[in-house]
Length: 215
Ligand code: MD3
Ligand code: FE
Image 1: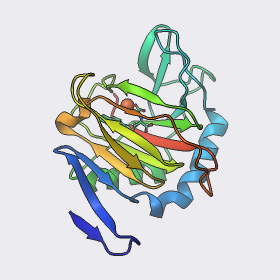
Image 2: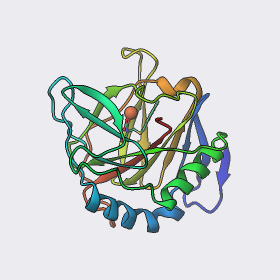
Image 3: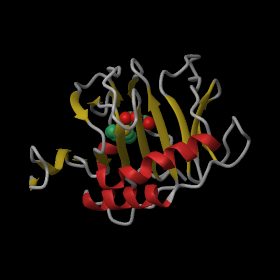
Image 4: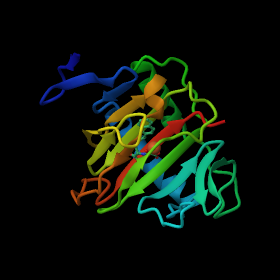
């Protein structure tokens, strides 16, 4: 573990959760100033919406996308699509600040040359949660996934390759980045219901950027 001496209290610069999963505490903080306006501009063109699961439930997390491909869900299933079903337009391009952050974070975790083509943006209000699931709709399971937490803190659940495997809880704060690759890419994971702990800039929301190579 490498200590970041500029942090007060000091936190590890990079913490391994398992062989292919790393938390980079505060890695996104130097980008935060650019990220909030970029999210605002994105939601103007592709608003956050609550999608329907194939089972007929409305997700408590609202989401949108940017990049060449966007993740969508409806009664017919989950898939990646080049267009936003709400507007009929292509998803907005991935802002440069997003692409740079994802690439640098992947590299800091040992995955060189990460070039995401999809950024799923999740928006959590108090009480919203994400139940245990696997991310397996992407074609390239060899590429890592980079997740950036902004706004209110959350507790992330990190499980195993079977839904019933025990989970560990990982608290994530504004600016934390998590990178998953290798075998850990297909682990079950989720987010506990969010508590209302307003963030000075984001208010009572948590925004999570998830970068993937989907196509
Ligand atoms: C762990 N989002 O959008 S970060 C999702 O905080 C999603 O909004 C969560 O799970 C969030 O699908 C968690 C992203 C994440 C993505 C893939 C993973 C975590 C992962 C794959 C394996 C283990
Ligand atoms: Fe996921």
